[in-house]
Amino acid sequence: MTSDIPWTRIFPDIDHRWIMGLRQGNLAGFFAAQDPTGTIRTERKRWFSEEPEKYVALLPDAEAAMLETCELARTLGNPVPTVDTSPLEQLLALGPAWEPDLVWMHPGADGVHRLAGGAVCFPSSWSMPEMLGRPMNQVHQLVPGLNDLLARQIDTFLSKLSPGVSWQRENWGVSRDGELNHHPSRPRAALDSTVTLEEVWIRLEHQLLLKLPRSGSVLFGIRLELVPLADMLADQTAAQRFSRLISTMQPTAARYKGVESARPALLAIIEAALANL
Ligand code: HEM
Image (cartoon, rainbow, N blue to C red):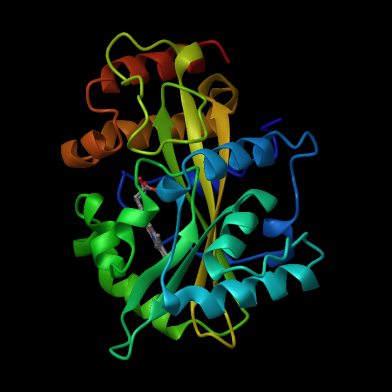
């Protein structure tokens, strides 16, 4: 079911550019289980047990935040497996217990937020352990032009966060498979001029940011939702806005998003879908 996806918020009626897109969050709703089939947690369990080094990492700076997140989850009624051996083992148990991925950013004495740990098995073409210790602007280095436009705003936002108040935003991408795990080490079909409607998925990242009151770290939750392109195109306004965003994307952004050589094919697919509505 995609009728409840707020497409007009996710696809603003503008030419493409990177945006903050923040709004007040719903912490309990974000972390509550949403997949009654358990498929998401089963897949999470697989990645965290098969190749933990690709998906889990923790610096001492994030240990307090991880424990604080466990306490918070308990108060929200989420299951929290308790492991006494080590903080890393505790995090490894946490990763598959919940549906969203987790990252903690910790502010240093210089006020700069650095990635201090997390459990991320459904990344959109990045490796969380490789980003360990990096400040926000380095994490965002892989997105062309993002820092020029938003780095200052993002740093200000993180340093002014009120403890306990959550915020949410979405990122979207396009892919040629319905795979949740897009770790850079995994093979991936490229979007190119041969792409067909049935092969394309919208990759929606629902993100939550929360400054944890005691540790002072920022919890960054990422909940991934995959939507067949055809489902989204059934919504005329969404299709029109998506078309505008795809066609106005700078070449560097289109390359980063993986749609550079598929752009004419995608636009033709959207046009055909709109003509049939
Ligand atoms: C106020 C907070 C944040 C804002 C406004 C923001 C904004 C953005 C935007 C606009 C993109 C480009 C997405 C696209 O392809 O359309 C992006 C990508 C990315 N962001 Fe952030 N971000 C924020 C926080 C974070 C945090 C805390 C992390 C920590 C890991 C992070 C990691 C990434 C990564 C790895 C990417 C590239 C992969 C992807 O496209 O998802 N961001 N961010």
